[in-house]
Amino acid sequence: MAKAPVVHKELFTFDSEIRKEFPVFCGVDEAGRGPLAGDVYAAAVILPEGLEIAGLNDSKKISEKRRDELAEIIKQKAAAWCIASATVEEIERINILQAALLAMHRAVEGLSVSPELALVDGNQPPVLPMQVATVIGGDAKSASIAAASLLAKTARDAALRELDKQYPQYGFAQHKGYGTKAHYAAIDEYGLCPAHRPSFLKKYYAKRQK
Image 1 (spheres, rainbow, N blue to C red):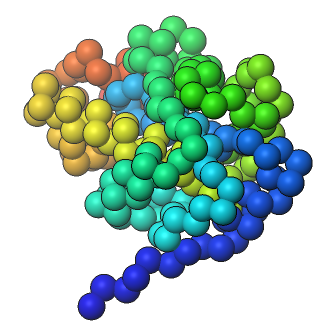
Image 2: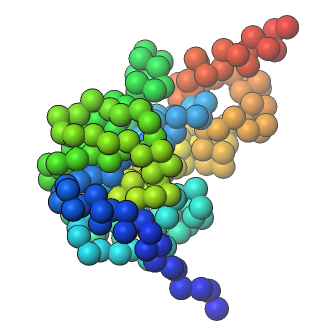
């Protein structure tokens, strides 16, 4: 029999402490800074006080199937949530860091409730009209950031599965755009498609030419 999912109390305790000073705050995280292809995604989530979601944790510690299940629970139970992205064209024009920050900005701005604080994973804060605090490793510390991480990750994975239908030769559904051996082999055989980020492949092509 499968084990019942555990409530990671420490994530919700962390949020409770934040809520003492900022009763309405959102967790913010991004997904897809590292891959060779696809848009970069971000999400912002406001969880209601007292809510505990069993199994909610750092998205990297959860299976793809369970992430999809948790994402639906978050969407149903959150006080507000928004998923946004920045395109490959934007990544190429302003660089991946700025594109990720832009996606975060769009996610927070798209919330139906205005938070008093944006709690952002990492150490690079987006420019926002409210107070912003960064938390390194936030998706393993804050329930709200973990929820945002899950929404961003599942949205991006779904987008890559759609890209796989358009460009089946690259295997996007399997590697989600990351630089796996199979992905590089497909690039060698077929070249780049419009979903690829050319700037991410400069070093690879330079190395091949030596």
